[in-house]
Length: 211
Image (cartoon, rainbow, N blue to C red; front, side):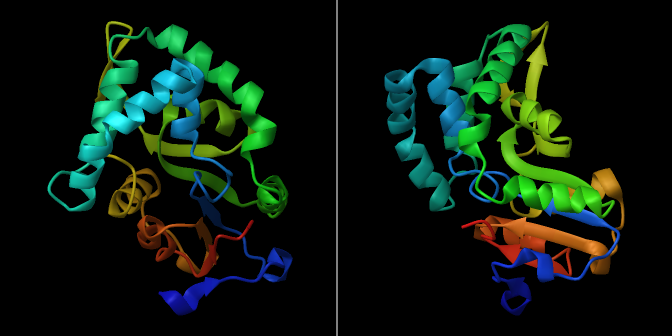
């Protein structure tokens, strides 16, 4: 896998093929984690940071393999449980409108435009929730595969309605949405080891390309 990661800064030198571009979001296209940034926008800096600190024991258990996504589930329940879907979607649009220019890394939009010019299908595949990533994808004209939040009677329950979209789950979700894909016509962009299963789908892989 490692020898397939292209670390060149001149992205225009890559072979042009008609096909598919798969982008991780947080850290790859953005300078900051959109989950944390949206929490701070929604709750305020102090409340959001207090919530993140209180989740640290669960995060440690996740990293040790004792639990899976326990920290994320705890944060989602605490931050969004019982909140109106309509009001939260409005807040998410306000957040993205205000943060759009500062979130995206230099060169990210140029690369997305390049893929569009080649006629490629462009999809962001992210563990972040569609609640706050959908407005970004709509603004830049790309598709989205993301973690989804459960809703009941117009309110968020605070639970996920899909598996956390990271690691092998990214591959499963891509396969469910697209079926079989042609690796030779596929580009994939990532920045963490959890993106490696997605990068393995593509012949053209780029690691931290906008840094």
